[in-house]
Image (cartoon, rainbow, N blue to C red; front, top):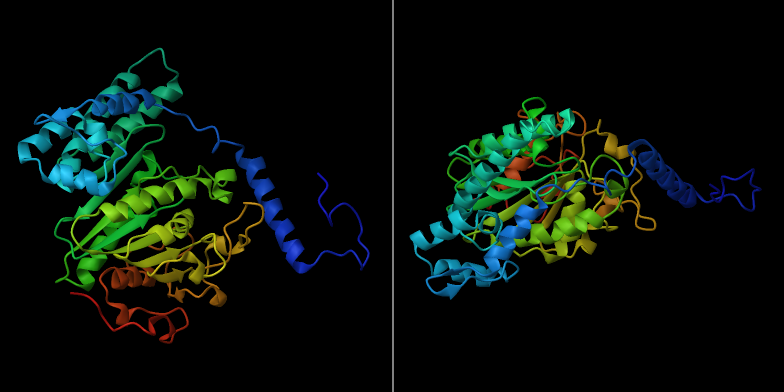
Length: 411
């Protein structure tokens, strides 16, 4: 490898500028990532692909009440209009017969999606139960089946509200806490790398996983504004990077996730305002999605961000307020905040020049502690999620992050 400025002694006339050195450092970081993690993010295993394909093929010819169902890629409004014209029994029949489609179709009523996904989870559990006992598989594959089965059985419990479930590959899933149909304010957790079906929730390091994050935020919002009807979505509805490899250093998966995030925000029921809480690589997804978000998204909050693939908040092209925080011990601060040849994610959102409203993250304790109960970061999340902007605590200790906002917009 022969990088400019690194192949031998340089004369004063050819010494690289500080900016060039910074760029070279970023490239070296990526090379180290690739050397230590390999190309696993590129070669991800794809399991259960046929189940999804079969479901989509069957849906294409489905009819109810003598009327053809809308295509799986139909506009959200068309899907919503179609399902609003069905009676309860017809919705249930579609959910029971085509669960892998209905449970993941934006525009379908939330309660119908919950029903469909419970069926899909039960079917997927049966598949994994068979795999766990299949002696033709390697011990490692059987162990993987046991882990997946444990997660699927937990998610299929009647009290859980699963809004998204697709078992393809490492799995996509989203869960709702609270009454989504009656909520005045909806918060969406957008997590970062290594998020999939298995890591969707954890018994250890609970608040580093989407379910723990969402439960913690939901409890904090109800404590902060008991009279405000809130709902929180733990959204692992996109394929996230595996480890700190090439996918974590580029925006390819973020671009794919952004399309799904925009669709989710558009399809949420009612007229509730929406706040996005984007952690780590999730902030890259939110940054790419920002310009396409509906106006009901009033706030985008990033924590532990490697960048949002822009140089400043104005370039996001959103009417939403942009907030940023980072704990003093978060290692993400050491990642070069720049973009070069598609590698890296741009400027640091907590930099004063970026233009975000900077929030205190006191007590967060490194990169995965932002949703821990009792932290200043979680308190700030709850205040923004409930519209209590006047009590948000700024990173600077003054009122700079609250300027231009009324003290509270909570209903």
